[in-house]
Image 1: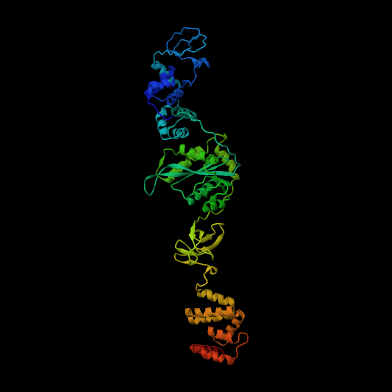
Image 2 (image 1 turned 90 degrees about the vertical axis):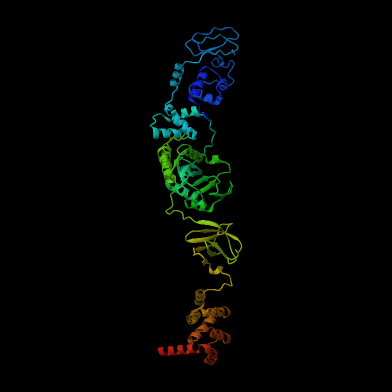
Length: 557
């Protein structure tokens, strides 16, 4: 009931109702709306005349002649007799009538004893808590929440129906709309949704903030998991699902949700685009997401009912000093009231139904999901994308195009935005560093020394030995000469170049120039001593080195 009248105004409305006044006349006399006056009269046990009840439909409803004395009324005219309704000690006397009288005779108001007797006869066990109930109604609480608070905090011994009738008398009854009934097998489906949580003090700002209520409801047993958070994001939304599955001890085959951004990027009843992180978390637990049709909340009516149940019953008008305190209060209510309630349609206890459904839930994986971050990056001119100030190489042909990127503490993955195919996977690098595969490097990129030596050893053992000797004696300055040896391998082949390098090692002249002259003069035949002498003269800058090597080799003999 929207309006709560004072005690004097309630007594006046009840007294006029006892006289048989119509609701319209009571409104004109007292200024109380007909709907409010009718609610108070019905709560006091007074029958309210429905509109259009004049005529010969019923003798009990056709009379409008009301007397309050003790004597019976004498019929006047046989054709227009009035049916008398008395509130005193005399009995009604009525004549046969073809048309009901339209005049009204009013007497005096009922005595105070009669009013007290009437109120006492209709008094409810909730009457002593009227002020408390009216206060909770102004906060938007429902009858169940008020009943539970009266039992827990005030020692109320009455039943829920008593509180429900009393609240209905104060607020008026409403006719609920018909809802779709969806039957599901055990362990088949759950429904998820967000609702409005209570006010909780923020630990940072020390001000009360409105929280968000996450609810997961099993489709078969109606078992709910309710969690409170301050704010939502894609990761928070996925973590709430994981916590709910852990609390239930298993997961369902299907989860039904609406089209909120944390779960669905592009709403489509036939081919919805799911959030990548949310999709991967559900896949980790073997769950398939089925978003509802846009503006079709009845598809997930079970969780809608669960959200409304928590909002209106335990949390309405409540304030908490911390999120942990609020969650503990909600968990206590869940265990002691929500799970032990008898479901209205199934007529069974929720906890008992959940005990039967739990064995049908899917087993949880051994390890929790490893959460990652994701985003979209553009491949720069160097063929890399930037992730947290580090650079990771993309395949050739992607410069200037966008790729999807997933990264965590260990790996960085580049994905095709159209097909989701994995393009490249790199280990996470330090800030400012580069991670590029060899096949992805541009052709003009100078190779590193270790890469050159590895290529040399792969081309041939003698080639690798000559390149190692060049690097050992010349260091970084020998990189160009090592590149020259590898170029000779491309030009003359690895077999001929390896023979030339073997000759250079045999003559103790491991030099690029010697190998090149050897291949230019006689790429197929062994080099004679007569051909070696001119080459040695050309290598005057290495003469001391050659002599030292010769002396060293002779000393070993």
